[in-house]
Structure formats: structure tokens, C-alpha cells
Image 1: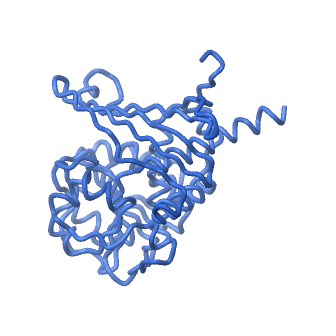
Image 2: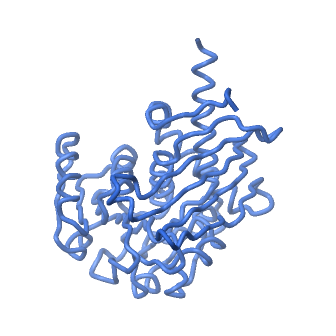
Length: 317
């Protein structure tokens, strides 16, 4: 165990780039949707409720043969940590040698989770969005920031709209963006005002009840929803879900674990991997939703990229 490396957030930030990450996750989602022919093994994530402390822990294992990625992410969610000066979400990823099962590395899972989630949304947006010039972000925490970072690099964003349940959070993010980009940033006091002119919407909240409903939006707007990862939580209204074309990362996972899908009884049109593989259509002329749970194959291929980058550094010395 003493020789197993641990890669922290600084290490990961130095070697994990969105261009490589999007390519890896696009391939992983495509392989996942091929079923038994895709060389992917991923069970539903196991969840342990810690009711005494209003928290839960999840284990997310996966194997992606084409990318030699065998890994398991352990993630905890304890909302009360905000009052303890601790992150509400904490995660660690363990990468294994796919030939022997030996542990190859352990790494901080928080930055990987943020980046791979944004990268998956970017893949969905690449295939499903008609335009990407106006980006509206609901929720200005870690996921909101990572999505803006990714989308600024990958798409021709010309305007960013922000809304947060606490306006001060939106103001902090707006100040950060103003100092680092020339893209105009506008803060909105209402969800409706934030999304009315959007080409792409990112919903990245910790809400357990719907915050975005079927309000006036462009008829072909594309929505990435990355919050509400439990079957009793929602961030999208049932009216919005049932009146949109819904895509997911995993149909099995979404049907069991996504409150936005479960509680609305919305029809899932396709997995994004089906669109990548050409077996289902990208209906860009309609309003589309990518309901992202964040699946373990995304963590596995991300961890493999980090490990390979570090091995390359060692071998070049």
C-alpha cells in the first residue's frame, strides 16, 4: 500500500484537460450504450443512507475495456457539513490494474467529478444543441463553475446568464468571470428571467424540489440537468420533463435513481450514447433535456487519463 500514489486536486488540474476528457467520455458513453457489445461493465451504484446525520455514501464501480479503465468511486454527501466548514460532497477514486486487480492509484474525486460532469454535458450539448451562444446557468456552486469553464473552452459562448438561490453566490461567480473573460455576464433574480433567451441551460443545483418549470424559453433550447441524483429529489418540474424530449446517460440508472424521471413519469427518448452511435436521432428542432446522473464509466476513464498522464511524466524524466 505504501507505494500506491495519491493524486490530489492540484495534480489532477495540471494534467486533465477538457479536450482529452470530452473525447474519452464521448467514447465511454458510446461504448456503454452498445450494451454487451461495448466492453463495459457497470452496475447500479450502491447507496448507504446515514439517517442519523442526514447523509449518504455511494459506491460507483465500472470497467471500460476500450480505455483500460477499471475504477471505483466512493462519494459522500452530508449537507450539514456547510456549517462545519467542510465540503458537503467528498469523493475518492481508486484505479485498478485491469489485468490483475491490483490498486494502481488513488485520487481526489471532487475535481474529477466536477470536470467529468461538465464534460458529459458538453458531449450532450455537442449532439443536441442547435446553438450555444447564450448560456444560462442555474446554480453557481462547483458544478455551475465547472460547466462555465468547460463551455467557454469548447463552444462559442457570447453571453452568460446566472441565477442562484442566494444572489450573493451569483455575484461572487460573476465577479470571478468578469476578471477572467470578456464574455458579458448578467445576474438574474428569477429563474424565468435567466432562461428566457438561453440557447443552452445548465441546471446544477442542490435542490430537492423543482426550480425550473415549463416557462417561456426558445422552442429548441437544450437543457443539461446535473442535480437531483436521488429518486426522491427533483430540480426540474414534471411539466417541463413531460413536455420535452429527454435524453439520459443511462436509461437503467435514470429510471431507478433520477427523481426528475421517476417522479414525473417522463418518457426517456434515448441515451446520449445512442445518439453518438447513430441508433437514435438528435432532435435539435425540439426542446431537449439531458438528465445526467453522472455514471461510473465517466469516473473510470477520467481516472485512467490522470494515471496515464502521471506515468508519462515519470517516464519522461
